[in-house]
Image (tube, rainbow, N blue to C red; front, top):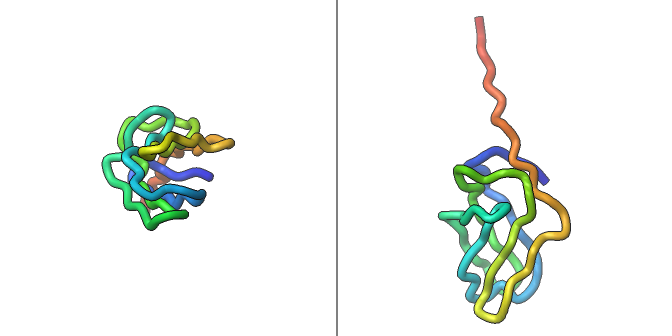
Length: 79
């Protein structure tokens, strides 16, 4: 999956109850919401680069098997 900084990303999995952190290639998401036990929505933080997403809970952590690609927002100009 991919998106620019500021994009809301939905992460699905199991046992997300009590999640304490979400990181995008090591950069902490400042905003995330847990819809336990199987879904988290997180905002791609400033400074994030392409890499795995990691979710930390009180019982451990899980890292995505594929990278999230941080893309550059496209700007359009009208002349």
